[in-house]
Image (cartoon, rainbow, N blue to C red; front, side):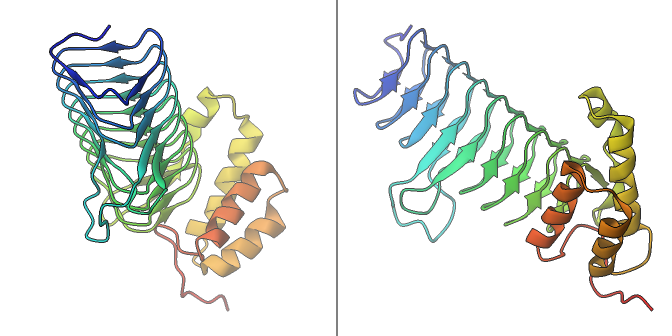
Length: 263
């Protein structure tokens, strides 16, 4: 369903049963998957690929030109997975790097007036709250929740199943399964309620909590905390996710001490 009072470039590839409402703008080199709905006054800019069963609400701009001086007109992309909802006035920028993409996963929920910068990767089933600001080159892993007005600075990394409470400013890395709150951002607890709701067992949650007691409550360095975690917590995918995340990010995580040396 494509009304006459919207613009759809002839080169755009529109899937089956797509609904495009009046006054939408669909640029060249755009692909929209089956059963997706594009609401009025939405702009889908060149290089955007939207999956099937998505819904993009009024005033959103998907695949906007990057807000970065390093971008000089390179051909870049913005890729949205299947089943993702993008609410009113969201802006998502394309990559700044030739042939590369900003990527939003499947079944994400991107709430109103949020902004996702160039080359960021938002994995599957992430919730981005109202007014969240995500800078360039940020990575948010699956099933995480960013509450309203969270700010993620450039190159921040958020682990899976994390929750960042409203208004937090994060300039470091948020390890998986945690709740982060306050400013400066700090560890608030383990995301136990949501984990249990989604099938994690009590023993799994207890092991995650034990790992974070070593990291955040032992008064030792991150390096020493990792040794304690590996010695005290039985090997498991969840323990490995925590340890690997911290090592991958050079021991730099929100609220932890890099420079405390154990006696």
